[in-house]
Length: 329
Image (cartoon, rainbow, N blue to C red; front, side):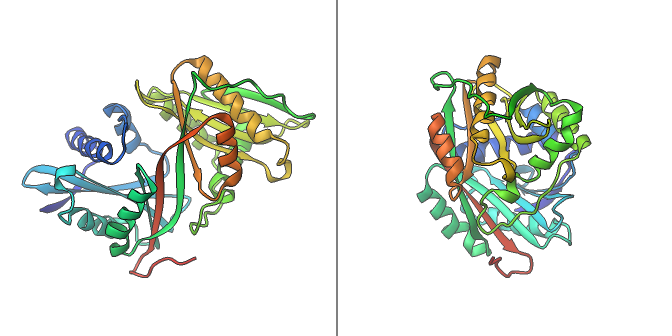
């Protein structure tokens, strides 16, 4: 088995990466529908503040697995790793070799490696952690539950905004004068929501970064539906974003939902979330919507259940400190 760096700019190589990723993901996730190849490669090649390094495992000239190291400019201490191996090639040590190689090609300033995985049940998550992750030094940082809503059957009606607030919904980008405020809330989603041992810091999204993200989704054939709550002074105090899928059969997904801490307890999160779902149903580009939340996020889990979301799979987030010591926080 030969490990080689992969060229993100090479179309043939990325087509092979896409095929391996699809086969491995479909094997692990029941009913998973792949993103179209062109749209997925757009994401791999995006100029979005992430450094991406890919390495492939070859059996002669056949790509049988690959690993990626992804490091964001705004969290340079953390490299996200992902590994995909063809189902028939699994349990041969290829994944373990790829993990170590992905760690090796990560930037030297990255002191923590993080990875996530989806499985059908919590039992399968436990098997993955014990059989693959822990022997490599990775420990469970947190777990999430993925839930799905059938838009056609959901009992949705716009919620009235609380006194002193308005709720507005925008398609493919909020107005320019609101983008900086939205970027602040987007950067707080991971930092303020429960995340186990991960301990994320705020990472505000600039107006330029916001515009680039909207443009990338449009390039992929996706539509962003964002709902905001504004206070009496016109300040954005709650935000959510739903992104339509890239192809038939795929669900839309919710990028995030957040209410400014000074305005919580007024059902603003429910108001913006319902507003975006109602607009998504009117838009007609999707029949299903998926989202996930940390298993300790009791507020968001209760809201999703109230709206009709049902559990469909489990996710685990793992982490390890560079140098072999396990992260313990």
